[in-house]
View 1 (cartoon, helix red, strand yellow):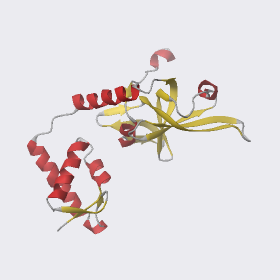
View 2 (spheres, one colour; view 1 turned 90 degrees about the horizontal axis):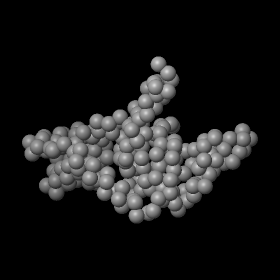
View 3 (cartoon, helix red, strand yellow; view 1 turned 135 degrees about the horizontal axis):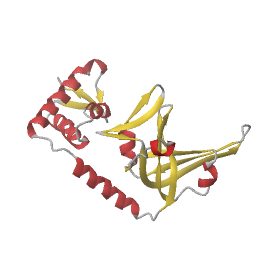
View 4 (tube, one colour; view 1 turned 90 degrees about the vertical axis):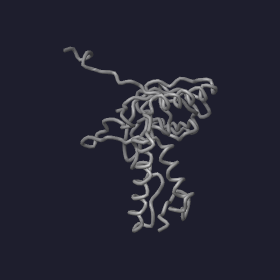
Amino acid sequence: MPEEQQFKRHIAYKLRVGNILMGKPIVNEERFSFLELGDKKIVRVNVLGNIVDRYESTGGDAGRKYVFLTMDDGSGQIRLKIFGDDYEKFKDVVQGQTVVVIGVLRHWNNETYISPEIIREMDPKHLLVRKLETEKDKILNAKPVEKAQIIAIKDKILELIKNSEENNGIDTDEIIQKFHEIPQEIVNQEIQKLLEEGIAFEPRPGKIRWLG
């Protein structure tokens, strides 16, 4: 089979930065394979946001050119890393621009970043359009959660909080990660109920302890 027929181009998923940061990088033999987000295995992304920082090197001792751009879409920040021959392709992208980026996800040294294939300047009004698009997709793709399942989730969260007492509590983010298959809004809602009912308390913001 010809090499070009063997190459399968991955879907570029429309995501917000916050979604990417919530995903789990899957690494095989120290090589990044894909980002696990719900039931999706993501390699390429389509992200829209503002360039809020630009750092570049045009040489140095090794003569290697590179640019690091930081993108912010209101849900989080992620870096776009551009090396070698791509430097000329994206050298005119500057801080303050609103851009759409299509690129491949990479993960190195505990950082998930984007290696861009396309960066195109957009009207800032598209930021709101993209936010509405991704929120709509999240609603359409969300699986309904039964009342009995929500009660079970609450019990499991409480058990997790109790078992964390020897560590002086547990972070809210860690609870959310433990229940990654459940919509984050529901997990936050059940944590809030435990706080309101006086079953748990927050010794500091984002830290939950059992009020036993």
